[in-house]
Length: 216
Image 1: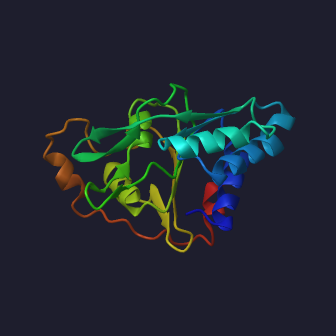
Image 2: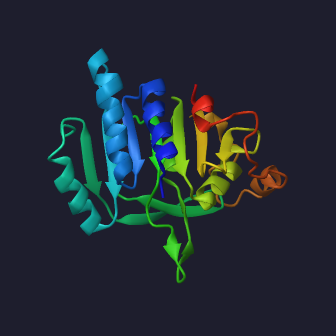
């Protein structure tokens, strides 16, 4: 669950990176925080930006859709209902939103879908990986909580500081990466992948007072 400091990070990320297309995995209060930052920091300067917010729970999607109509964000915010599907990269499996529009996203925020239950086990989100595996342009990803997702991304990008985890803020930031930063291969049976991550661990990021400092 997002907290007020998390909202600060999202607001500042939009302000700092000035993205053209933002993908939000899991709609909620964060949708309005991101939209407000677009309105405050990008649109007045003539910078266009579109926010795509995905949701897999129909009732929550309808609720958020009804609220967004009453706000001043309708021109640049789109909330989309989508079922989830499974997606694999190398030996890592997780969930994705099936119907994400194809845009050149440069900022991704992961706070959905539901991570699973006692029957299915906990799943990581793989939407960022599906996007980045074909991208030569830098993309930044912010993950709310979701340690399973952060661990999976650490295996894919390596533990050399690319994936920065802030346990006290319950956030992970992966800044300005492309497909060339992925250390794992696309092949599902590449035994070398296991050797590449054998000694890689998700460690707390050190030397930064807050995640906002690392955004710059």
